[in-house]
Length: 124
Image (cartoon, rainbow, N blue to C red; front, side, top):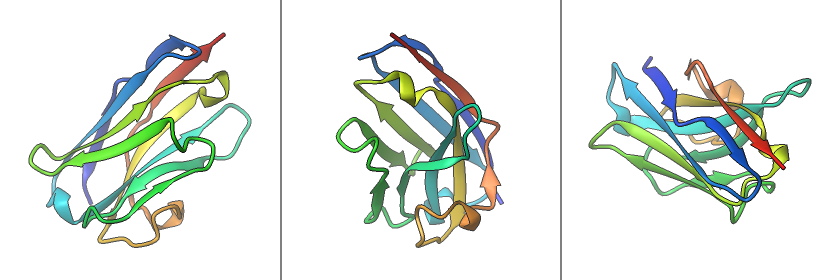
């Protein structure tokens, strides 16, 4: 497993932007599929975006397509989530997760390492 630490959450007004980072340590980052998930109060956790370990596969939830961008830096063992045009419904705790050489990008059951989460709050 890898250890994951998220950062970059905060409060922003609707239409604003945030950039989340997730720093990994412990094993070879390049072999991990990385995903971002979120959980809003009273709702189940959902997949937001993911990027395959090879870099060739990327997934976005329909609700964030065109607004969010996931990327990875294998040199610095970090995955990013650039969030633009934020909406109040994006408010949630955002979690970073890792799946060793995973191919099922949006299936949270496949991910075996999770960060502690970072709060994102979007107000009108």
